[in-house]
Image (tube, rainbow, N blue to C red):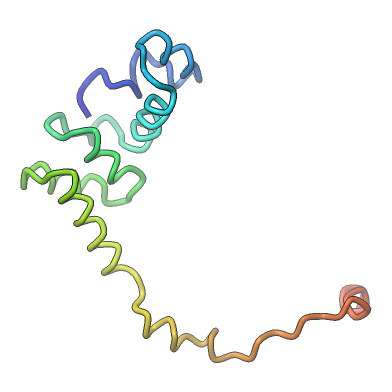
Length: 125
């Protein structure tokens, strides 16, 4: 994110004065709120001056944001390429469908629902 972005300008976000910032800088509230959210998720030390806001938005809140931003900068990746890389990482980390189908939870019999008259007896002992 380039220096002086809407999320950081003059500390408006930290003081909760986003409406005033929007008015002063002539930007839409949604735009400022999104910039503030991204700025809050990406520490200033991790931001890459040569990358667009969209790059930072794609990795905001991820534990591997620094690595992904470094990769994007080194490769000259577009926002779309970074988004695809994030998807690949998510897919590699996600359990496979076959693993989910074979999980012990699926093998158990469904729990029986308590009838209304049984409920107080189960709670009270």
